[in-house]
Image (cartoon, rainbow, N blue to C red; front, side, top):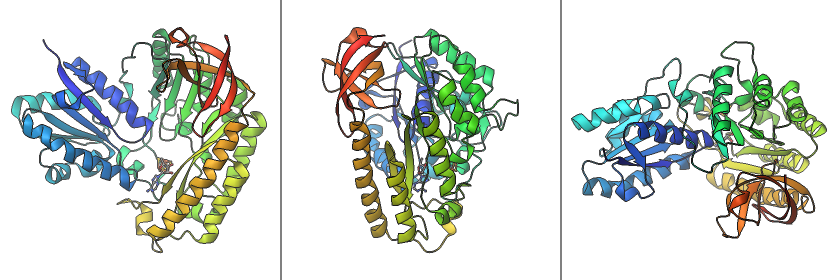
Length: 442
Ligand code: 5AD
Ligand code: SF4
């Protein structure tokens, strides 16, 4: 039977990127093949994110652009999944009448049945119920030929309820997969030639707390660290309050664990941290950073910062700037606070004006650009271990890989190097990448 065509738009974080891979894998088994041209699609899925305002706006404008395809081909099925779908449910179809399907964050595995029903009846379908054991966590996406890195979901949901964040409301309570399932899956990935795995979850370092089988995140790292074929382990995202000393020690004891941690701080002000319900102080955060750098001096530390949280004063903001100066993050994702319905922070008064938020964001971004370049420049002259991932997007004569500290490096090289671990001398540093010269293939 001829395959039908599937096109997926993905918005948001790595979790969503990986969910889209799972959607493609499921639909592949139901007679759909992914295509690059949306104009040829029989099924279009928009995997949405609603963590911040702009993310939602982007989805609506994308849907607006799809209307013409539906007019041209009434049999085309358009579905939305992810956080925005979870939040809006059937209201999404009232707002966008040419939508056929809305599926929530716990319903990915229901997708083949939902699509079949729509195909057979021509009716719309909405499914956004939270389910106990999240079946979608265990869907193993196929590995593209030649791919060397892979995501693997180890847990989903979040129990933290940071006051600004919709995630716990839309992705449900925290649920961890069993250690043996994860280890089996990583071994399958290693058998397919995957060299680097990134363990994914909203708060990976609280892994295990909800399954209560006596294993924590550090145990998982030790286990994965002993799987043959896997050379590198990364994880994201972690919460400073759950960064135990034992986990910090993993950076020196688990050889395969790469020297990079994404550790969102959100603000440098104790007053704002408390209002955000982050459960750590500025001093706690500094303490974690010192411990990480003491055990692993070259570790790269990246973070997230929100500016303009309700009640954030100039003094609070200066505390954030001061902290950035003292820590000097390798990279930073910074955002203007955006009010989300249903969160505790939405009820707070003393909102910060858009204009002040924009000014503060500009200051943070300009300072971070300086720090990023400074950190990158400090690597010139180093010999770095690079896992080669692909031919460079900018030049066919170059290959691209990453350092263990997660910096992108381009250097002269050809196809045969892909999937090899090589030593590269860093010769130049830029804002978003490094350039180097191949020394030897390890
Ligand atoms: N407004 C602005 N930024 C937010 N984030 C999460 N919720 C909000 C919000 N309501 C940011 C945090 C988080 C990152 C994934 O998104 O910095 O770490
Ligand atoms: Fe949101 Fe906080 Fe959970 Fe991260 S830890 S997903 S910011 S509630």
